[in-house]
Figure 1 (cartoon, helix red, strand yellow):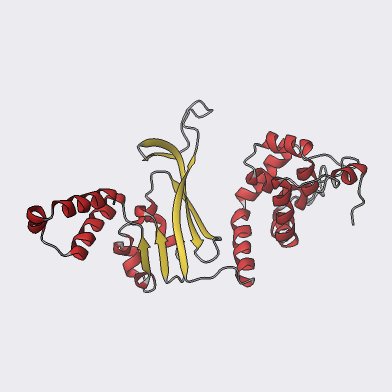
Figure 2 (cartoon, rainbow, N blue to C red; figure 1 turned 90 degrees about the horizontal axis):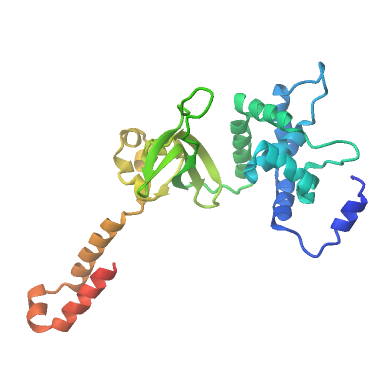
Length: 288
């Protein structure tokens, strides 16, 4: 067990824990660090030449915090120096070592990206959740969100990133990529992720987000998914019950038809004999 410093003892006497510290404590207990380190080790520098590299787990913890708190390379380095909770999560003792610098973190991030280690770690998480019985299967929620990117061409190549694209959403233009996610309906855990340019429609990636599901839930952007060829051709996908939220305009039309069917009355009779009832019906229809 790590020996406590005077700073540790003083900090442990505080009255309450911050939300950040509570979150980091939970992640420290939940993440299978040894398994993730073993996934990265074959791609990590051995240290036989040049300066000995930082420990894999140290770099992994720093990389994860950068993503969790949406920090830049310089931002996460400064935050670790400034925040006791983040320094404790890193396991760094300033008597013996310092926080990895910006360049070291940059090289580690490139190593993760170039070797698709993020995907390997994500798949490992799915296996662990499945083994623990936390993924229910049977139902998936599909959704997509835009990840904004700088649209400026003031860079070395004088051009925009070719993997990004502009798209209109909610009467506003956006530029970037689109993240498509399949979420386990029973637990809320994300089981599948894909990324596309921003102008790719949500419905185009749906087939890649499905599992052995019986029911799939989605917003109105997925209207007509059951008619797509990749769904109709697949033996399992074609049997899925797609519960797609209707567009507001269709909800209003459906509500009008439903009320007319339930009331089962003759409009002419209402006009001629019951003007008060007709006014009440009109008010109800306007509220739908």
